[in-house]
Figure 1 (cartoon, rainbow, N blue to C red):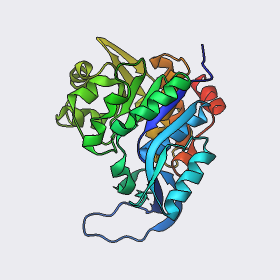
Figure 2 (cartoon, one colour):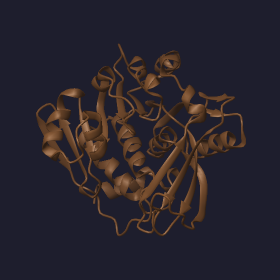
Figure 3 (cartoon, rainbow, N blue to C red):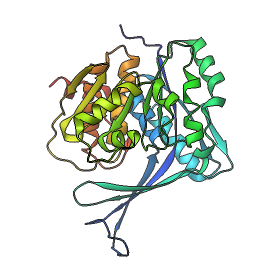
Length: 308
């Protein structure tokens, strides 16, 4: 049964993204001429919160921005996507920024400066989460790997002793804290991150990586791009096929669309398999437009594609 009062809490980062288009990525020491693109909302916390809100779930973001024009832009954009920003702090640190290069195939390279995001401390957010929980169910806390390693290690405190599940997209892999990994349900990684969190070569056979991942978290989801995703739960392996789209315009933010949609679906009462199917559909739709949060589809569009 869907609970219309359910809240997803997102503890994560907020950036302003600046896009530059190039025909081909430069090699070290090479200068290439690029085309200035759009500037808009970014940061994995903000992106995943936007994707979650697009699914019609009440979404509260716990984060920080600077007292600057970019912070004002970020808050405005978050509200436009339906995200509750009441608990996004304003600090004297500058708003985080991401500089994104897209090549002609739609692939990207991203450089991030953290700024105010370095101050986001989950340990200081527990009281806020408890208050939200007193107002209605909080089935999911969603987090990513962009906080400092020390702050990421505090994330289990947000769910400890409660019936709230921690959905952790450890991207990038900035920590291998065993207590953090053990609290994740699911832990979401792409193939490269799956190898990185295990500290094994990325050339390690896929099935071997899957077996090594099983004991480190309550459940694990490995995204495989055009091959879909795999759910690892206990000894079971469940494969979720990819959703096909005509072409790829821009992959920026597609992974965040997957994670935010999956978290929203879990909060709506879907099981992990159906949540992954919806996340895969949302990620596919996000590749059809340029940008991150600005490319995200509505719940109606996501569910329609997932059912095809």
